[in-house]
Length: 400
Image 1 (cartoon, one colour):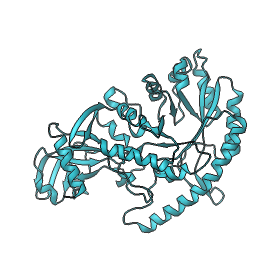
Image 2: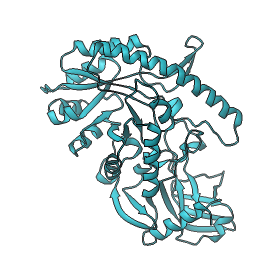
Image 3: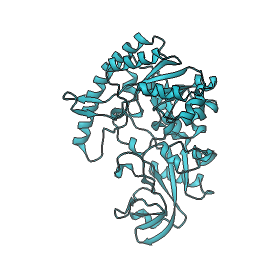
Image 4: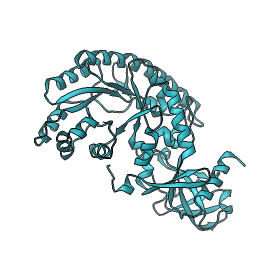
């Protein structure tokens, strides 16, 4: 029996009393992945990206482990909810225009001390001040650095379009704008190198593309390490009380941690290890989050149909954004239909061994987005479900 076949047997036994559709997290794999992130971080704390987990119980579980400290959230509403729930160090990783949220933040000392907001434009400071509604609490501010690699005089750009602050001078000017405005304090810098941390460098069947990605990432790491250090020096001259410099992501943990100026690493997808994180030469993880759909039809030889399953992930549309049939091994989509809204035909010889009601296990393309489809996660240890916990959706929250 292969390791994957053994996992399938465990998951089927653990959930035999449950009807699909359902989602699980294999806690043995989750904890092993957490240990690997800590190993790669080399002693620097990991701030957990909540968007990649979207389950309070699992956020609490990972933060209870050595090597993890703080959360990186994705909306202001989520940040406030997490802070009210007892998480005392929440970095909002994206700018917000949530005026009601800012009024709440600036009017509550507990929330203001727990939540740090992201800034990359003076207009964001004005928006917060206009939303204060009498709130006088000092707002903790993090400045975001654009990490993109710019080549040929800026004519070629590699990396996500995030912050407009690219040079040390631009970030230092933003720090000065914050310092001049009462009611704000610069406490951190964030620089997410998505073109390194979120792009696989070992693409199956594409050796030339893989080599090109590795060359690009090596150049990007060198350029960013030098520029990030200069940015930190420039900002510390304006804000000597700077508390943290956050960088990295699951795919770049060990590289970012090697930079002296970086004080903490941001990561989250590496806990669940969705399919987009299969294609890296620098690390490998264990798939920890899966979902199961039930067989509801047997249209013919070598074909079964499962209920639903059309759960595409965000990003540029393409096959890599689709879930993949994972267990039993050897199933594939019908290219004429793909994963569907209410039914999904699956092809391959393993289909002939599946009966109505049997579970087919899938892996989602991106980590926490799976939780937007399910109210609960069944936590599996060995071959038993030991707990069932709500996702954000199960607690009545869909923040985006």
